[in-house]
Length: 187
Image (cartoon, rainbow, N blue to C red; front, side, top):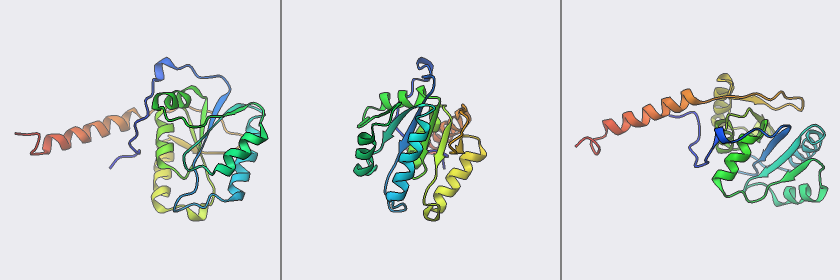
């Protein structure tokens, strides 16, 4: 078992300088566990407005983000923000994650949280519909919090950095062990 979801995002951490005062707000959407209703969407929109008073907010919707919310963000023309639509380029997406001083990610996607943590930029999980959170997600969030990879979002957060090199090294060793034990590779 691994701690993180496996992804194909490319990170060029050493080449990217953090953009001073820039944060990313990465938004998931409705899935089998979360309704992502109007109340949740309004809270996200309101929090982005508040954050934009202190930070430049890059809003990154996912393919599951409700179109209605994306349109509201566009129509509100929130000062000190930009909405980044259709980032299908893994290198560009990785650069956005690495260049901010903080990443705020809705807690409905293990993949998006994994990608954000891997960037090395502090990740804050944005909770909603707490009664709908499956055990799998609870364990995932708890494990990452215990390792200081993520923190719960609050409007007055303090940016932090993290590294997952230990977990990556363990994953690499586990994969190599499995390969070495396989009769297919030991002929």
